Amino acid sequence: AGACCEDKNCCAGKETPPGIMTGHIHRAGEWMISYNYMAMLMKGNRTGTSKTSDAEIYNTYMMAPETMNMQMHMLMLMYGITDRLTVMAMGGYNFYRMDMNMQAMVMNGMNMPASAMHCTSSGLADTRVYGLYNFSRKEQYELIGSLALSLPTGSVSCTGTTMLGNNQRVAYGMQSGTGSVSILPGVSFIRQYEKLALGTEAVADIKLNNNTAGYRFGNEYHVNVWAGYRFLNFMGGSLRAEGVQADNISGSDKVISIPINEQYDPTMNSKNYGGTRCTVYAGLTFHVKKQFKERIRIQLEAG
Image 1 (tube, helix red, strand yellow):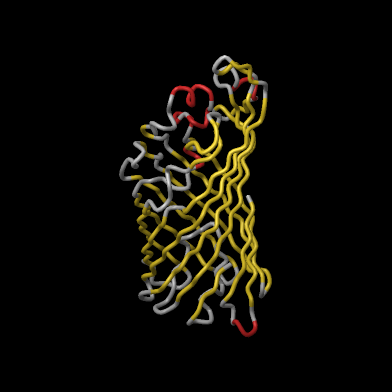
Image 2 (cartoon, rainbow, N blue to C red):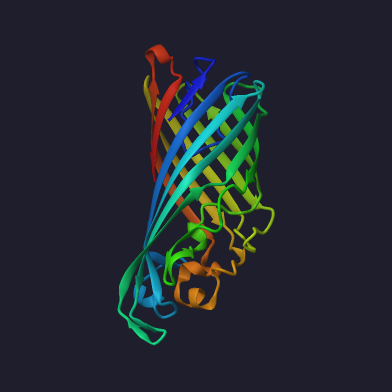
């Protein structure tokens, strides 16, 4: 959900999907505040593009991930410095839950039956500060260049339940932050028709340093293409496709990467991170009219 002020049309005519953060700017003096909630469920395992069963994972490890849930709450503030230059800041809070299956084994001379394990963690996410500039001089086109600095406000020492017990450092993917400073250069192009908007975006997330735990999450490269259409005065829809390439983790956390963790739990092995994925999303935008003059909109997107 988002709200704009100053110009009654600052939210009008823009059917940009909610997953696109750098697809619009604001006029001088306009501001926008938004709250975003995202829930993601991952289930099952893959080796490359092939599905992998628990039995296959048990050939290498003693544990196999079953599901992972992530919930993200994010606040974003945008402000138009000039008609072409907008600044933006965003921060959030993340929750994670991972369910693991464990095969029967012998540990420290004790027989351990097959079981399930649940691990949760949470914490502040990294904070990002953006500058966005519209290079186009035509209203029906927007060519927006963006540059962001990501600050490591999230933790890389979150704890939870692992095979070693409670209050243990959790796996890399369940840390709430990266621990590294990043730069995020990007470019977006939007073609606006009367009711139709077509757009594409390319963004890189480049980590500049190893974090205090001794490792660096892989760089990420995102490409989006989308179409949005205003089919009613108060409602529009969108379709979006996103491709993501994530590099491997460089280095390792000495607390996480002890031999018993890396040998028994695949999520504790830094070599198992990174990869390529593509997601397709469908979205709806509801424009609140009447006395608010389209200054408020509510957006939903599922992929």
